[in-house]
Length: 372
Image: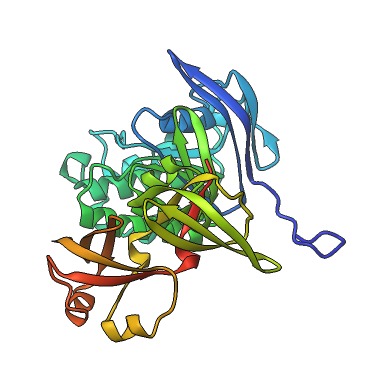
């Protein structure tokens, strides 16, 4: 939507404002965020951080002690669960064991006093989820992935305004989880459904989410577009939790403006001085943390090293190489200890072997400074 000045104005579809909620001795503390229509927010956090309580408060299972929740311009803070028009899926799919798949899918119509016609009829939902051949089966004869598809179809029948997912795929094997994740994303985008998806898997979070939120001890530590969270975590906790493996303390030794919007900053960690490009000025002598993603460490050949005059060239020893499913993790040691990841082709090309001294380069743009 555009304002009369021509600027784009977005309207919040879901607005959570300063929510606090308490269960036993645990407290959600001043949680605030907004979602546009069709956006997906993924929530990451350790066990016991408050992820499930946040979902259950939005769904209406728990009443907040303060704050407000708005959905589609309606204050739903005190509305009962059945009037919120929110679909939810948990690890336990809660299918009726003595009903067939078809009966389970149509159960909301049977139990609802006021059934609102969905945009998609049941047959279309069933086809979209590829469960036509399951309709006469019972839940005991379904795999975990099939049960999830049935539970999702049942929730779609109610025509919810948005969805809440509480780690629905955590019990599934990796291959099934990946396939269902792709299908779920396709369905949510096709129907323009807003959703909040709780997970402990940061790969899943960044695959599904338009926005990513990190929660710890009942507080939403950081929430924003996934590229912002991925590249610019606001704390060491967030950086570590989303999988950044190279995090170390440093002190700022020089700051120089190199353009109207960019500073060249030099920071020292032990005896290593690294150059960082940043849009934010920072004080000399300030103690900070530096973050370098493993995939941003570039291996160089000797000729490339001689022709490269950049500051951030390091000569490090290869301590170990560990193969994973898709890449190799390379442990480097010397003036600084780093973890890099690389494809087998790169290892062969640059002759990276355990015990060998190798040259690496870190771009100033790829280093992120955490001030706190």
